[in-house]
Length: 135
Image (cartoon, rainbow, N blue to C red):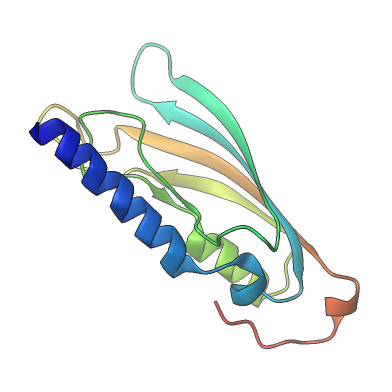
C-alpha cells in the first residue's frame, strides 16, 4: 500500500510542478518552439541508455526537468530550465553541454548518470523586437 501511495504522491508532485512552471507562451513570449535532444549516459557496461528528443510549443508547459532513469536514485534528475532560460534571455538559438545527476543512493556512486544535451530555440518572426522575458 505504501508503494502505491508513494507513486500517487510522486505523480501529484510532478503535476503540481508542471502547473507551477506555466506555459512556454507565458514564460517565454516570442518563442515559437524549443527542441531538446538528449543522450542519457550511465556508468555501466552499456553506457548509452537512450536518446530522446522533446519538442515544446507555446501551448506546452515550460517544465524542462527530467527524472533520473535509475530506480534507486532519489532526488536526482536533470533540470534543463536554467539552460533554456539563459538561451531565451540572451536570444541565442542553440546551446549544448552535459549535466550530471546529483541524486543520492547508498548503492549508486556520485555522477552515476548524465545527459548530453543540445537545445534549439526558434523565435517568432514578429518576436524579433526586444521583449521582456518572464522566465
